[in-house]
Length: 455
Image (cartoon, rainbow, N blue to C red; front, side, top):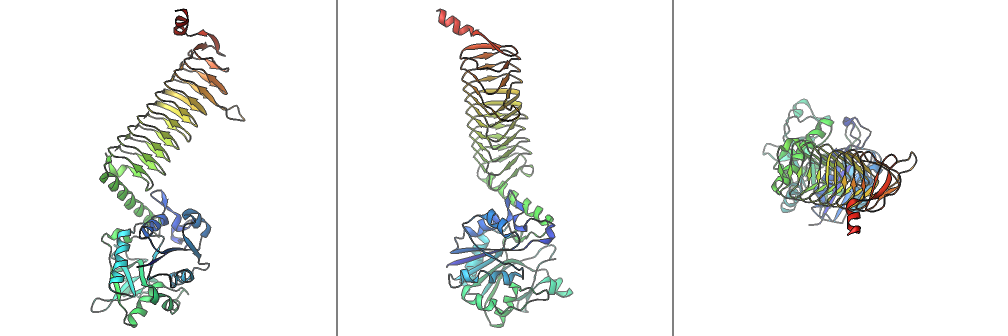
C-alpha cells in the first residue's frame, strides 16, 4: 500500500488569541505539528505534504526542507485545503491519509490501524471518532438505524438536536486515492463559504461506497488543540507519555508529576531524576546519574555517573563523574572534564575545566581554560571583560588559586603555581611560582620546587 499523507496546517487558530500560527505552539518543547509529523513519518509514506497558510514561512522553517509544501492562500475550509495537494499527489499512491497539524497526541499505531482497515474493507473513507466530555466545536457523527455512519454535520450547521449528539469527528480521514479527487470537486460550500472535507462522507454513502468509523484505543489521542486550555491538556498527556517511556527504559523518577521532560531529551539507564527537575531541548543524560532535586538542564550533554543538585545547566558538556551544585549555574560553552567538582554558588561560562579540578564555591569562571587538578579557592573570579572585549584566562595543571584571587585577563598561570589569598593577578605567573599581593607579584619558586632543586 502506497500511502500519501497530508497534514492540514493552514489555519491561524483564532481561539488561541495569538499571532503565532497555531501549529507552532509548543507541546513538550516542540511545535505541536512536529509531533504530528513524527507520528505520520513512522508510517513511511510515499509522499508527505504539509498544507500551509497563515504563517507559512514560519511553519516551513520549523519543519525543514524534507517535506513537500503547498500553500492555501485563502482559508476556505478543510476540503479546499486538501484540494491544494491534488497536483502533488494524484495518481501517486493507493491511499490518502489526511489529518490536522493541531492534533499532537495522535499515535502511529492508531494511524496504521486506520490505513489497514481502510485497505482491508476497500472503503472509500475511514474516519476516527470519539466521545468527548464536551463536544462543542467538533463535527457530529450521523448514523442510520443500523448504526452505519452516513455523514458528519459540522457544528456551525448543526441543529440543537444534532448538537446533542455525543460522538464526534476526530479529524483523521483516510481515502481511497482514486475515489477522492473527483469527489473532492463536488463539495458544495457551506454557510460561511467554506468547503468541508467531512461532506465527502455523505457523497460516499449516496453512491453505496463503504464508509468505516473507528475509535482510538485511548481517546486522549483525539484531543485537538483549539485553545490554551487544550494546549495545557495536550502538554500534560505528552509529558506523561515521556515519563512512562523513560521509566520503562530503566530511569527512576522519585516524583513523576513534578518532573518535566521535553520529547527531545534522552536519559540513560539507572539515572535517578529527583523532584522539580526540568529537562529541555537537546539534553542527553548518561547512565547512573543523579539529577535534582530542583535542577534545570537545557541543551546539555551529561556523561555517566554525574550528580547535579539544585543547579541550572544550559548549553554545557559534562563528562563522566562530574558533581555540580547546589546552586550553581553552568552557562553555554561550559565543558567540565571527568571528575570535576563544582560546588555551591559557582558560575561558569565559555570555559573548559580539566579533569579532577575543583571549583568549590562562590566563584566565577568565564572565558577560561583550567587544566588538570586545579584547586580554585572560594571567591575566585576571572575578570574577563574590559568594557569592550572579552579576554581569556589560562590556568595550567596542578595550580592552587588562593581564596578571593582575581585573574585579570588576558593572563596565564603556569603549571604547579600558587596564588595567595586576595591576590589580583594582572601578569602571567611562571610555572611553579608563588604570587601574591595587589597587584600580585611573583615572590619566587614554590618551596617544594626549591627543595627539589637543592637536592
